[in-house]
Image (cartoon, rainbow over all chains, first blue to last red; front, side, top):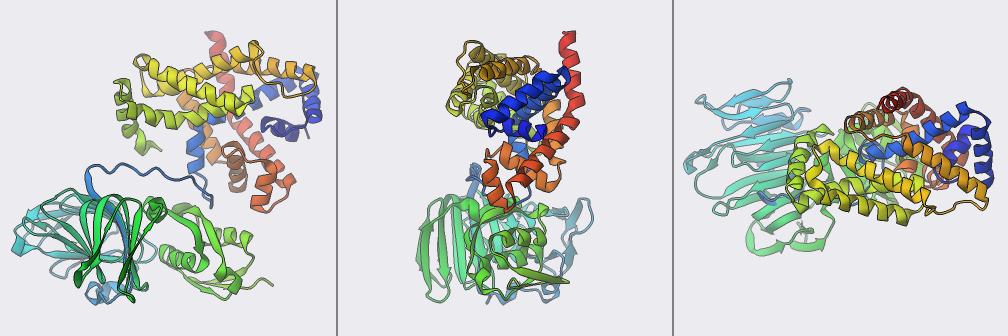
Length: 367
Length: 199
């Protein structure tokens, strides 16, 4: 009983009567007083680790707006999300069914990313072109234009990966993404990469060599900075969200149909209407995955389900119509939350039942 | 947490050299902590905010005297402790209760508690580490509630509603959290006590 009053007192919720009882207890013995002093001391000292503790909470919680890091040395920071896939050439039939991250080299050789250590990647001549790590790869060097060789990296559902291209550009790849890029950029010409899925680009500054992301029917040209591109084959849209600097998004086959983005704007290309639409957004929401988090703001359950499927490599079948209409807001740390954790949290808001068989989750109405 | 270490170390050097942007980083990092700590003793959010502002201004003015990055936290908390003691002694702390005797007793206890905390540089980082670890080690539900209460300053009723559990359950979790933390930190605090007396 006293412990309850004690914690109520420490959190400023005890009534005057309760405080009187507490202080009477404190005065009853030296031991009691010591206990109280210790408890309040610890309570006051927990402020020492204020931020750290918030970070370790693995549940859905509304987080305050993230401050966007200053990406001063990078030309452009953009998010690109590519939709409907007619980009067939990006799909390597060997890696489509693979549950592993696969790198296809220029000559067709396949490389995988298991093991814990750094390994060297050599080209056919035996020259060192990159260093491989379990969750990332770093390229270096430049070649003459004619000899630009393309590598293709495929990341399956349930995984994420990071690359540093030979010009210093850093690309984070989300689950279910394929990126085709030059093993080493040419000395002349544009820096071209091809994307299906979602990637976060921090493009190294180089005004003489424009960096262009080819994402399905849209092209995103970087004039200088950090951005996210979302271009999943099952979506009929390409979204690019600009964090810093400036980028131009245009129709691939008609470059005069273009739009210039400013920071905190998202441009959406729609395959159907062939239109480019601009809107103001909070980029932290769209770049959360690069920090290992999923962020939702009034997001409909159908979208959340798609994202969970990709991130955790599961299938979700929803038979609950109420749930399908619901919107949710919150942030989840991917590494600390299982699909079940997430479902349990969503359940509190909108009741439903679910069952899991292997990797398929079926959601039904509550009984 | 530690991957930020060299990043912060660089900022510390810039801050010492008079870089205002680097100072802003530490300002943001510590403001809420100092405010939260002070509130425990002066019971007024606005006054606690003023105190935090003062502490951080003082930090900037004395930047050349801070010897290491750990010294920043020690400096700020020592300032906060002195200021709180000052305010209590000069009866400038808001009276929480109608019964004046209760207010008086509360002040006495707070003075005793503040006097018993020594913010020595080395001890502070070690203590911070232990606290962080102890909070992380709490059982998930208990930790979730503790964090909402302690760091997001939510009322018990709000937490109960948010999580769909009873008020009693929230209170039980808080009691449990405090009990666990007390047992984990108890030995350490005793050590600090000994060190203070030996000084």
